Length: 68
Image (cartoon, rainbow, N blue to C red; front, side):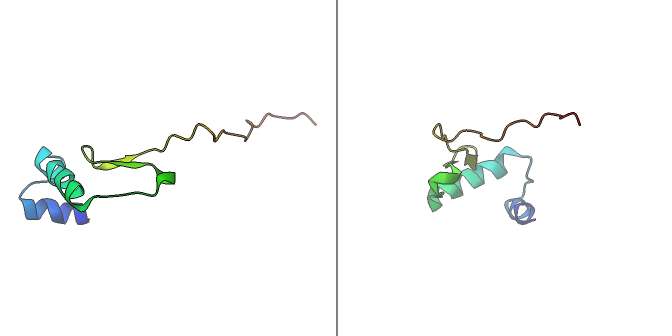
């Protein structure tokens, strides 16, 4: 909803490069920062990049069907 309001104010819509360029510029100026556990902020893509956590591994085993 807020994205559409911003796009209307810019005279564009959320599918246009001008909208994403404005978000990228704003995130640079605002110095967007995330808690490292959630990843980092990619200014060019205006989105979060997952954190790399090689020390964390999946421990939940796939469930197997057991016979009665």
